[in-house]
Length: 315
Ligand code: NAD
Image (cartoon, rainbow, N blue to C red):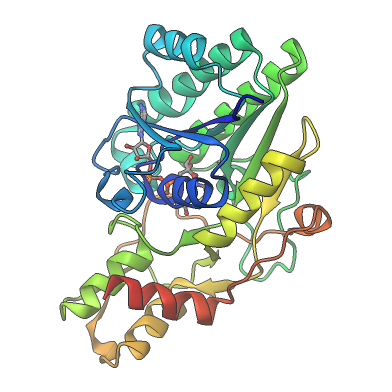
């Protein structure tokens, strides 16, 4: 029987990189293709341990390059597409929104066309809880899959737009799809522009830690390994056309996260420096993961165990 071919876009980035390694090691009978443009956010150094494996393949390409992508799909005839390639940093989207439209919207549409042309078994689109907008600090509610889409940043607007294209290709052309929307990830291999790796590297180097506003913004933290198991589950067992929210009920203020890291590393909280708030900074994100839990998913990390492991990795 032919070996299943899984395309992972963005597999040189943070989550995609972790997911590629997870899949290459877990499924020796699958062929795993990592397609990535290697922007500032992607590198292959992280794949030293798998690059010699027979079931791992790397393709350098731009998902917006229609001719290349269509030719690749015709040649390889992938069974599954797991789409993670994106511009992912909210701050960058505030200064250069146009590249978020290009990569996140147009790139997704090119991949959908290619997937439709060859008829894949499943197109899994990795999205974000940020498409739901924000919750109030004092609200006790959570984002469900039925929450309205109310993106506030150019990043989340581009992700919501790509989600709508994925939905439209399912409704219009019958493309088998799932969309996953997860909370903030942390763990090994994250580019040090995001809160947790930035804080860890600055604490280790005795540098000031910038915190936006008063640090009270709340995020729901998910260890990247738990995200990988969730994507794997949805890829194989997700009901066609469904959306799944992924989160582990690990809500923390940004200030709590930073203080936890400082304390684990035994430094003084005096290195915290409050800086002017991010434009349009969402107050609180919190996920209701009931639907994916019913599919059989459980996170393995608590925030305490995950952050300790992550700090150890960065050290
Ligand atoms: P990342 O920025 O670390 O990695 C993105 C990868 O995509 C990089 O390797 C980059 O080289 C590649 N890429 C960018 N433009 C490309 C293009 N035009 N063609 C091919 N490859 C290109 O991002 P991440 O944090 O790993 O996020 C992965 C996905 O998960 C994204 O879709 C993001 O929206 C989503 N997500 C991330 C988080 C998080 O906390 N990091 C949370 C929710 C959802």
